[in-house]
Amino acid sequence: MTDTSPAHRAAERAARQSYGKLVAYLAARTGDVTAAEDALADAFAGALASWPIRGVPQAPEAWLLAAARRRMIDLARRRRTREAATDRLLLSVEEAASAMDPADVPDWRLRLMFACAHPAIDAAIQSPLILQTVLGLDAAAIASAFLMTPTAMSQRLVRAKRRIHDAGIPFHLPDRVDLPGRLDAVLEAIYAAFGAGWPDPTGLDARRQGLLDEAVWLGRVVVELLPDEPEGLGLLALMLYAGARRMARRSSDGQYVPLSAQDPALWDAAAIEEAERLLQRARSLGGIGRFQLEAAVQSVHAARRTSGQTNWGAILELYDGLLALTNSPVVAVNRAVALGETAGPAGGLAALDEIGGDQRMAAYQPYWAARADLLSRLGRRASADAAYAQAILLEPDMAVRRFLEQRRASIRLNSF
Amino acid sequence: MQYMLAIYGDERAAESAPREQTTEIVNAYMAYTKALQDAKVLVGSNRLRPTSAATTVRTVDGQTKVLDGPFAETKEQLGGYYLIDVADLDAALNWAKRCPAARYGTVEVRPIWVM
Image 1 (cartoon, rainbow over the protein chains, first blue to last red):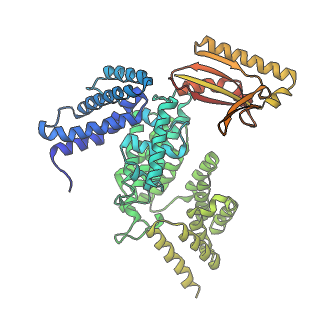
Image 2 (cartoon, helix red, strand yellow; image 1 turned 90 degrees about the horizontal axis):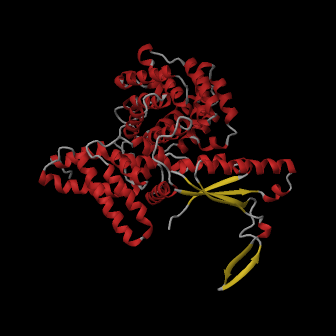
Image 3 (cartoon, rainbow over the protein chains, first blue to last red; image 1 turned 180 degrees about the vertical axis):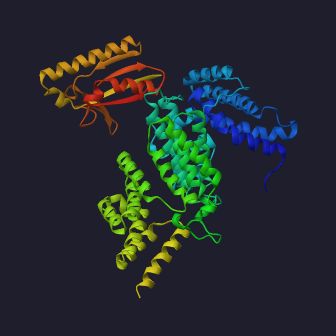
């Protein structure tokens, strides 16, 4: 049963709006993310105990900050009795506490994200770390989306936070010279969260915890705090374009619907229009990058809404640009698919053959799905059948697997 | 925060390097040390004699033994260090990138554990 009292709802609202801001602010002063999280957890527990009796305070965020701050000082004092080395920590907490103005908590969430995506932190844990510290998601929820056991995820998160503190990773915005590279790491981490949420279009899969929405929310934070960074705008546009199609990705009875068969009327028009505006703004700022190019591909797909067709020539050009920029095998597969549309299936297949030697392709589902489709269009049924078998084997999503099985069965039928 | 920039390199290659190259490296280190001093971040620094001069003390089966040679045979050896006092890891990394060892070998950046 969920508690729906006004105090509980106010605490939840405050948690949603303020959690990352408060963690960022508290952690930035001491470098200790874990202590900030623990203190804040106590503050939220205190709020749930106190607000129903005394009423919701006028400034819930300031109340939570004051409570968390007291708790941090308590914890530091207690630790001091055990460790002589914490004098400095205690001083920094008290100094930090006195410098805090609870009425106006600055928004340092981006600094927290830069600390989490610091090159001194293992790249694979950066995205989970941001999800936990900025959004307050628990390790078990993050673990399932990133295909890890809760214990392993929890240990790696604890280690990464200790590393932020012990190595002295700063909570500041990188200087102009370092910013583009450092921002890329933050954007990659957010996009990884989006990717982890992608298999769950309806947002109902408990294991995915609505990660699609959370990632878009993080993208909005970046754009709000760094409004003139074209790649930040590009990433938010990309996520909005892709997210706009979420309802069209399944039929009413839960069947997988590929992009080419989707009804554009089911796409979220408002999200697409916002994405168009963001992408235009990114272009006007100059400085092309990976996320803008990927967003531009999505923009071409979205144009089917009004034109009724897909301009594959434009998509191929964008993938050429992306391939030159990233040399990524994922891009190479997408480029081959586009080539299959402009130059015919033989051209697409030749492009896939070129990258087929890359070891990573053996376990990359989209490579096999693309291959199966091109082979079946060429009438090479036996090869297509084998490629479908491989794609089905590698596909974790039930609905997509059923779709591929139907395609596979249809080429078998046609062969008689 | 204080950080140790531990300098690792192939000491055998350094020993057999031509004289001009050795002079160039020594000059680079002198300029680097001066830059650290001018920025008022240098706490201390030393160059170590090669591992051929190292002696190791270790306890084996309860017995303290003195062994000739370094702690471990490695491709790159600890050849010296700079101890610096800077604001945070980014500042330490920026100094590490400027260290001549970043061109000729490897620099390990380790925060000092304040006791």
